[in-house]
Image (tube, rainbow, N blue to C red; front, side, top):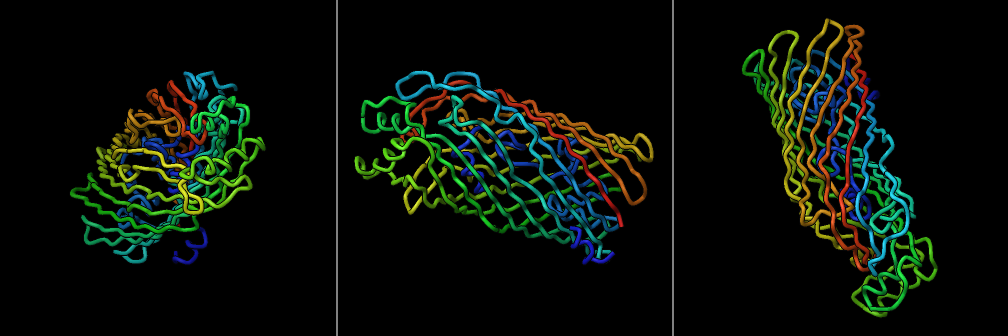
Length: 452
């Protein structure tokens, strides 16, 4: 199989997202998504891509491709159904309850794909590539829900295209390196309370919640670039160890914002700098917008042990450098519209899982894990009410023939209650929210693998 036919087959949107929207219930920690196939989701992401002939190694740890037995192409479809329900109080600047309902804006399935391929060129060199979605979210809170001043509708789509190479040093060691380009698109909506803002900023006796203005932001970044690398060590025929690293990726998204709703409210936002020159000038007809965010670097250490021909157990420890996300700044025409402290901390993920071959055709996948949140109690806000979570996965693989196989995986996330207690930005109305979110997540995935 040559490389050419295989090729034919084959955040700061995140920062904006956390600035203007509600909970990010994607995995892992905060707003990151694992880049596994269905078997990997079923193992609770344990073992990375160390299991034999797993082409997701092209992105996760390219060094593992050096031990592949042949060319392969893999497609995975993933459906995430997150849930986030708020319990508590939302109030305007006068302390009165905010009007509206309390819907579950995350109560729908969000689909996304992963594609991977690998081609051994020689006995020592293997090339591969992957299309992955490391960040993604879709929420649909309406503009009349009672938490509207902290976010309404959101759409986020981030795609990574990576190319990598693995070189086998000997029967025990291999190295892998790769490059990637990341494309990001985001649509982000929230509601401002201009009358509440007038009270908070200037003491004007205007009734809050009477002149709502919908703020919609659309931004994208065509390509930002990064690199990845890995090492695999096989001390015995039964054991495999791997380490991998993915670089920090700098992104600047640019686009536009638009305002909809009360004419009086829009005019008041536009005239705010006349009363206080330190306030940003918000154009009622919209304008350009940009934001800067470095997607965090992360590193993983994986282990796989084959106890017998039928039973294999793996473990993973992953560290994500979320401490690079300390402040969030949204600008327009050189002015800062929002500047919010986030103060994320570095987080860890731990997982244990494995496979058991029920027969030559059927394989059982299962795993458990624990994922730390990068948020902290002092700075957690309703835009990212993330919390520690426990992972439970289960799945099944079926080998149709020597060339074709399928896997299905399911993962459930048990998320701790996420406490939130904050007052909104004055220019958005200075309302408050006090309570907690109950979050859960269900992930269903299906993978098809073809070996050439």
